[in-house]
Length: 202
Length: 202
Image (cartoon, rainbow over all chains, first blue to last red):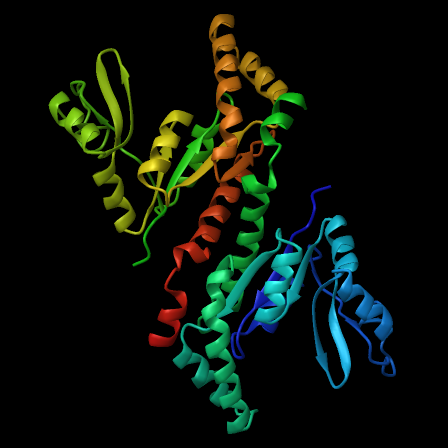
């Protein structure tokens, strides 16, 4: 069976990455990564579905052994992507989507260089700002913080493999761009290093 | 306007590259490269449509100045792909298909590194051989020569960017693979080197 791809999707607030990834997940070929966390499960949360609930000791051990693709801390708890579970998804032939921030993406690239890094962007910073203000759900303070964060994140696009622009009403176009990227990557020669040998021997 | 892509499609006899490229050409987004030649036009052949008919002096001068993306000689005449005409197609926003052999492809890559090199392959050498014999249009001698040539060409797949497999009845799948490759390449960060700068300034 063909191995699935690890797809990292990052994007600033207002890029629409949740909506675009939601489109991809309509197909069985795409799976969201389930994070590990050290916080206690809330009522109704199921281990392995919502999160992999693990102990702090286990989490720290995995970090030390390079078994966390990326992680972050929040309110004295760890959250991150376990490598082992990620690889199990890929082995099943499905593509794994990691919706993570730029720092996490850089770590994934280091630990799993075959990952495909995609940055989703609004058409421009001006449009992003207008979108954030337009939705009217955040305070001015939060909006300014997000825009400040964007100024740090977007320059790292040159560490990514692909940039996809989410123009107005372009969610389906973005999803198609990502599907094309996945299909093209599956044809890339660096994923077929034995192509010539296999050609003559199969 | 977005610049078109230069797409090199190579493949051994029986890979079906002519049929696959024919599928792509059904859309206006794809254009076949018109070769230049030093031979005289035959009745009905139109300059700029069938070939660019040019003099030997002109052709040799273009080779010397690096203005021929690739060329070959046959029956004392030159045949090749003029860079200038190729670039004009790309500037118009259309994708240019060059259906050429491996040596030519390597030369294109040298002169125009942005070119995307795709090798189309039958599922295996055994299937290729069966296809060539099955169509019954070539003599045994010609078939053996083509298979011999394949042994030289396919190992160079590692100099290509993508490998597309033409499985039985897979012409439409191959055309879709190539369309996906083109779409993905248009999103690749190396084709958007100013992405961050443009994001904040547009």
